[in-house]
Length: 192
Image (cartoon, rainbow, N blue to C red; front, side, top):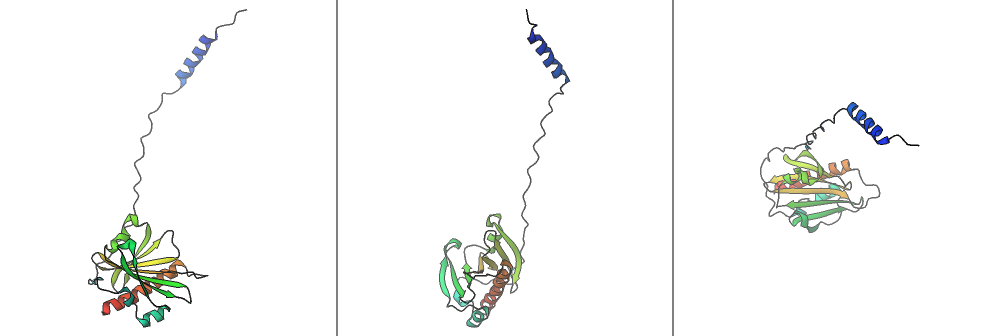
């Protein structure tokens, strides 16, 4: 018994399917890249320049101001290597386990915080009539910074943070406290 040839039948079936299939369409062009934009912040001009070159950061909070802010430990002078070896002063509230750091950045302006590489949430503010920014770093909820634009290529760096408080204040409260410290420091700085 001979079998009918299958190859011609299969070939005819494939040709029939091919005739009914629409031609391939051109692939859709790639969509244009999405532009990622960050909100730009423009700061107003400074009312005047206050150079920080000869300033002692530990002298920017008077005894009265430190007491009003609850900073009961003696100021501790140190350096901040990542900001051009900036001179800084640390203050501590031992009762509430909170800290204040005042830094004098002399190697770059406050605009460094407005760059995309800063990777921070930045909001414009004013401190003692000087332009400033409130800086919240995404991964840090234990402190808040206020940066005051005091001179070309220089800024006053204020950090308010938790130093081991069992129930630390929220980030909004720390940012408000950082602004309060910045105002006190600027008051002292402008009175020099």
